[in-house]
Length: 281
Image (cartoon, rainbow, N blue to C red; front, side, top):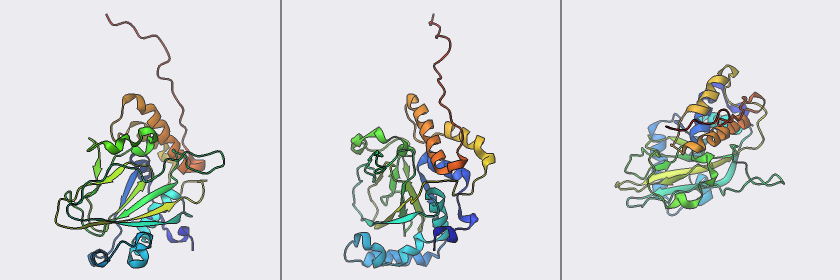
């Protein structure tokens, strides 16, 4: 059975939600389960004698139900197409009391697309990280931090890893059961756990299987002007003014790659052409 047969229109993302993801690089889903469902998964995680690695879903099969929830499937289908696939890699992060902050990092390898078609394209959404939190995550429990919009600037380099807090970082303080979907290139880090509780995060990786021929979300072409305005106007983390044209171009390129035949027109404008600037007296 394909994902397309399991997704109802009500679970697909809207144009604005896709624009949010393009601009910021993340989307949060709160699939509806009874509280005891997540509490049960937490207890099973606590009882594990060691980390199962990629086999975390075999050790605790109920975790798969989170990633198969219609709200999660709808978001993934909207971003990756209805034929998206689940990668073999999975991991459970156990952030115990006293755990120190991670260095900032990207999970992707930043390998550019090669002439033979292997590798990746920076303006595409080819893979997403999907992080599930089975317990409420407070600000002192080591929540995931991320830098909105950083998925668009692959040249930031490993120098980010040596930095501490960023002014515009977002910290995932979320209720139990939340699912955080991240662009694979976004800069993120687990923060220090200064509480007396263990914070778990289970991470899956999902991948695009084919290029988009048309929008796979709940798209309305009447929104194109509004979306283009947002791609050129909305701020994520603040950047140098000189990088804004590059940022806007990459946003539009990412949207158009997702939209296929429903892409929006975006033209480079030479803002420096025209009369010479007048000398200041």
